[in-house]
Image (cartoon, rainbow, N blue to C red; front, side, top):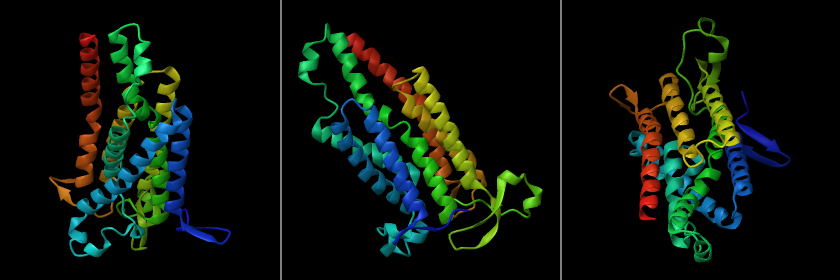
Length: 279
């Protein structure tokens, strides 16, 4: 089990904070390297980061309102931990969109449009530009997820349900681990489940990138795979969560997120057809 804190020289930092920051930094570096306009993309990434942090905290508070209703002074204190990945994704997308609208980053320059041979090609080029930034963020989903789950292994977040004995389950599926209160008990190894999930999705995304398949909807496909996997892992989690109709509230969000790929893919197809028809 990773230590709760890591010491680097005279600097001591929580393992979760450090590895998550490394995951975000690595994801941004990969995305900027793949971007054709790294300066503009960096602005969008900053908006996504700010929106992601706000959204992650907001969703965590809402999903655990029974606690925060009695401890409202802790709502804005990020030092106490508590981030939800659904809010991070939605907040990040919203932050990216706001910065894009303010700075008109997604607008195709007029000089580029004048060089197009037809209006149909211009419309198609504009649609391609709109999805280019999300394409650079596809690898960020499994990378940040992988580091986040590793951090949870150290911090005790997202821990598994207690089991009667480690001997009654496959060795890889259970472990002696602690919860957020520091209580050590035999539990399902949910952080390992999450790391394996993110590792598999990472390999799938790399394969799709290598083959050049579904470039415009690859981000949404990776998000759907992660959501479906998180939904399954939810049945083994032991950390507190409000329950609705037998499922954790975060599982309901996983369920909704897992269906966004076909919906958004169809919407993108309709957008593409409309651009062709307008041309």
